Image (cartoon, rainbow, N blue to C red):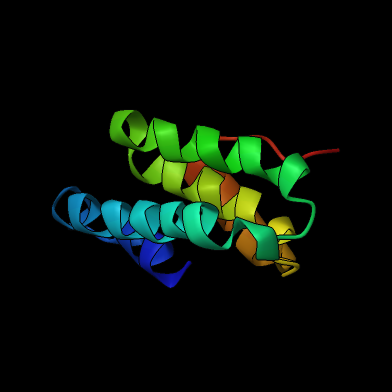
Length: 97
């Protein structure tokens, strides 16, 4: 999350994004491939995670933020309101009301 937030807020985003985003995607791809059994409700969360990973080559950091939003409930980590708001802002998604 820190990598994504720092890249999004950096004046060097165009330089940092191509480095950071593949790291996030590769890490979560490995989790889905090798440790998907450890996720909470994998059948529920896996499609959103895979969709975000598939979008990464097209939209970069926005998809990485979507991926982090999708992974939080899958690993049982509640995001603080400020983290969720920041990730939604980066991804361009609207909060769930």
